[in-house]
Length: 164
Image (cartoon, rainbow, N blue to C red; front, top):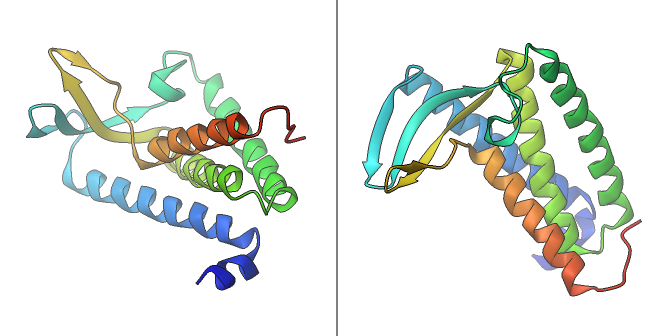
């Protein structure tokens, strides 16, 4: 199995990105089919499924702006995705770093598709405790967060080494 993955080179990280993208889009389609905007379905004392549309960035940052942010976030996702693909080719032997980038790429493209198709990102996972609610998020957001953590972990494991 390892030799098959090694022969794929940077393609294995693109497969990871594709898996994230498929899971993200599938879960969003399921939630869109099952819930109406504003619906809340409690599954645990700390977790609900909701249907929310985020026109901003993470945690609804800039969501209240008059609309310029849509083009900005679409452009940013395209540029970041291109840079990630370039980095995957350049650092293909750095497994942890490239795994993080693959997760980020899949999440970025998943949220980009939402922005292009409906003008906002579909969020549906809602965690809360003691009356405090974490902003709703989705599979793409989770992958981006995990991917960023892997990239940071990789950089901490190799002090003094530049990824440039």
